[in-house]
Image (tube, rainbow, N blue to C red; front, side, top):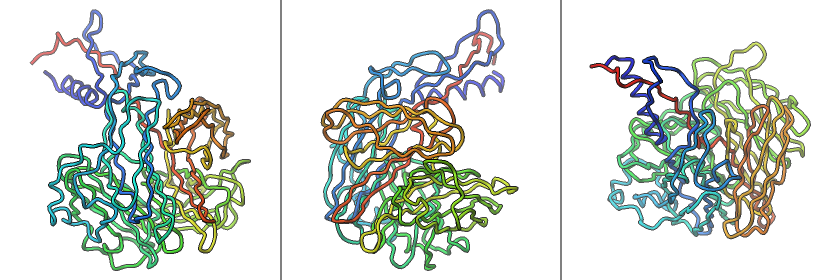
Length: 529
């Protein structure tokens, strides 16, 4: 068998392992391989990891888990039509579950200052995960909810297969009414990865920022954490080779990794072996707390969607991981068009260094999104970026984070929405776009609702999204671009309490529910030794 044939079969076999669908067909009357457009087929397995929710006994956590119906939220049944290939793949229904990890050290109430070997010291890594799922999803199109109280709620590890895998989304929303960790902490549970960037963390004196590392696999992961401040890499002797045992979760206090204080820090998480889910929990004495998810991959152009209209302070933090400095043009996409914010029109980010820009109340009462692109005449040097957004003032202020996010290419979902307090931001940085938004049934009842929106090019459309008729419980919002240019999306959840403007913002990256599988056409009868 020649090398070309071996390479072809290896590629098809690899894709089949991901999607569960691949076939080798012989072309009629010939031996040549004909290239055809790849089919878009649904994934058959998805993994999600949720960090331990909180350290406070006052914490109340809500989980909402959801998989859109086939046909992107509006159809029914258990099949999903592929695009480009013209075929239909039948998916058997299955149960998607999220359980606590094997390691009790992952509980939020037991956050460790040093993640190294903590799980091995008390033997907790040997404990099996709970057989009882915290969240169990039964069918596409119907969200389920679960609740947990106090600081003992663990990190969660979960898998969805079959018809529940494409687009599976879980939102973790925690409310802490008092204390240094007060606020609404919201995060989309994430897929495991090997390389993650978190610009916008802090190791200032008034901050207690942790990076949570969760390992979904049956073998241990070895993790390195690099910290970068305004002058470059921060010296550390503890951040290399952090062990995260199989099925375990390990929180690491960032300030224990270095003796160098820094207000704005970029955290880089990489794995030497295995993979992890990671998120940074930022907490300040005066500003409350929230989760900082990973930024989109380094790129020369970035979009940070969903700055609330009443933001009292916005701080941009960016990092250039490449060899070249980045000269960035900073623009705000508002409801009426794209503007250059006065006094914050540009930002220079030196290679290997973290840069920040205080944009104050840049939205001026009108919701918007930030657009970063190379300055005129400058090369497109890759950067990662995030926003720290503040609502309220004094002892009533509250923070949330908005990382740069990729566009919604086919579909994206925000799982936890309420009858009141949910706001949806849709940004079209280029051409005008048409977008369909589907509100699912509620976790305890209701009928789905669908609405179409037009987002003019260069603007941000901020709306109160559709609410299911007869809603009981929480519900999911699914966003699907229909035509026009790229769309970036974010959802804000407003849950004020005792005069504090508590809120959280989640961006909506594409759910990657479909994967391109090339159609392999090869006459196997002619394969030789």
